[in-house]
Length: 109
Ligand code: FES
Image 1 (cartoon, rainbow, N blue to C red):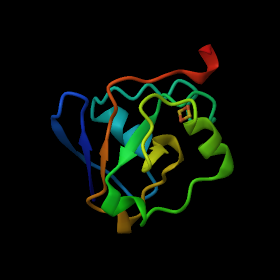
Image 2: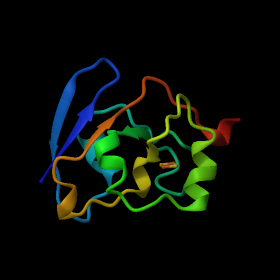
Image 3: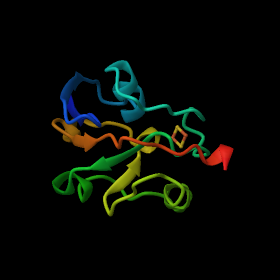
Image 4: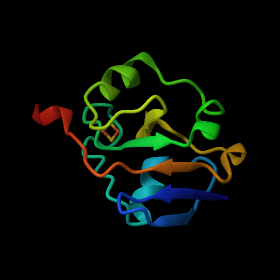
């Protein structure tokens, strides 16, 4: 399966992924600037991505903890998610997300 990332400079990066992978790890492996400093502990928000609207509705809903952490993320949109909380499934083949140009580490606030 493939996942499409739109980098902060507008470049489109297509990454090869497997069901069960975390979206954060796939993005990092593809060289995108996703820090993910808390490694999926929902404590930093540096793994923030903006999901393409047509995909947002198809993902399972964000937990309350994720929503709370998204409040700290820079440049949050309606379809923002934490990429560390998205586990890929086969149905997500073609998933498209934008990586914002800036991030905030909530642990440093
Ligand atoms: Fe820190 Fe996702 S990696 S919140």
